[in-house]
Length: 282
Image 1: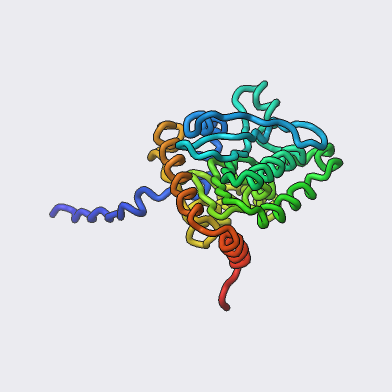
Image 2: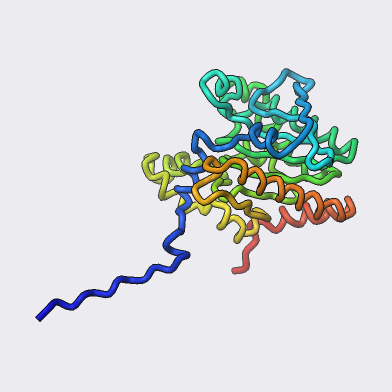
């Protein structure tokens, strides 16, 4: 008698193609992934970069300036990590200091004065934690941005395109519409940092990432973000032009949606949006 074959267990398409939060983190950190200035070049026109915070100096990790998107005048701010050793050092690996956040706020005040939408592009492992940043009050510069962005009388759209780490991300992340690229993460701490605190070993970073629910799908479900921007199936780096198109379309949709809302109503909605975060019913 022949042996009875065990039928193969069917895997639903949803489970078959599920990607863990840790895998999203790895894709978000891919060295060929498009960065802030890549998207500025591919999505926007007439970029005019402005420099300096009018207090201490300029910060290469936080480029900012004036742009047009389909003819609409906007202000853009964001983190830039850089490629190659020299560029990464110039950009401080995307970790901005206090000058970067003060420059970003200066640009936001220009946007408010001239009634221009603000486009904030987030891609940072976190704000720069060095001694010199602490000496020039990095915590105060981020906290000041949080308050001023909540009160800024113009539309704000924030997009996490890669890493959205801690206060470094939130310092330019208070917005009317918060979006995330599909393979990005947004978290109060990096997976490695969380693993070092909870398990005393960074090797547990994958477990920490999956436990923190820091991926776009979970954050959308929790109401932390408003929209997930689709990427090519294997990540934005595999088809940058498609990723750019999806990002640009999402920004235009956001501007169109927000421009029809009176500014006082917009500020009230912004306030309620952030007050509601973290609420739960026991």
